[in-house]
Image (cartoon, rainbow, N blue to C red; front, side, top):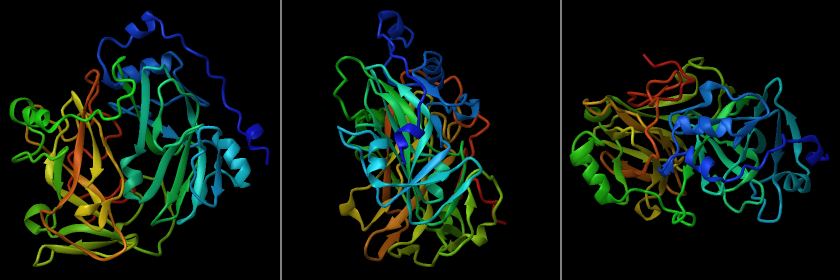
Length: 397
């Protein structure tokens, strides 16, 4: 197939890490805000085969776009330290699919898609990726891959090269096209003492101080245990009569670029609160549930959903979601946004009870406050949410 010849990428120009270049980012370290991501674009640290659209920029992250081709592969892979992704695809003899006019990615299959965006990072800046909220709520498993990498979703400082998305729809077959956005990337600037650091989460002590003295992180008392603890809402008093949704097995294709285009009842079975405030998770089923807590992310912080310890239950919160600064946040107001949980059971049925610990939020410091917070952009689809499906579905009546 000569994949390497077909998938040419724009030249990426090396940037000197001069004192002047470093000064442009200021003296702060942590996750980079939207305005610093724009600075990276101006300095060609982020380039693309087509102009980056303003709607891709979030308060602390950048949405990534699928390129013109997808490659269906037999199994997920990492290229390893000695190979590029294209070399691995060539070895796998992958089937090539054009996305120019749109194509269906079948449920249960694995695809690798070169992305439009490419990176040319300074040594002091690394990156981490995750599925977009809408992607997770459609049960589309997606991870970022880079050349010569041995881990998913992480981009080492100093990386120069293309980006790829591994995409595997789990519940629904989906239609995508060139330019569709399934995952997002955020950038972290480290000082010289942090270059080998891997854990940037704020401590429980710091989170308690934030909640008590700076900004209420949740409605009610804060419960921290290696992050802010989240509990599942399964009672009428928590979220109302409808406590969740279960994905149907046999449905039509969902176009990921269509908003409010589908009826919930054609793809999801609603789950109503029971008298015992319990829910039995069936193996292999996919559920949308909500947290009991209403959370808020202040402008100086960002957060990521982390699953609970597997020893605490035979299930997992399926996707690690990212919460931009401003999610659920109103200055001087009460927290207003629940965390929506994408949940899948493991090998055996498992009983969830109302108020059971189901996940936690890990918080991290921003290098600077974003100039625009979540909820004030044109693409803040989930601000103030309760139990909510992805943006593709019309609100149930």
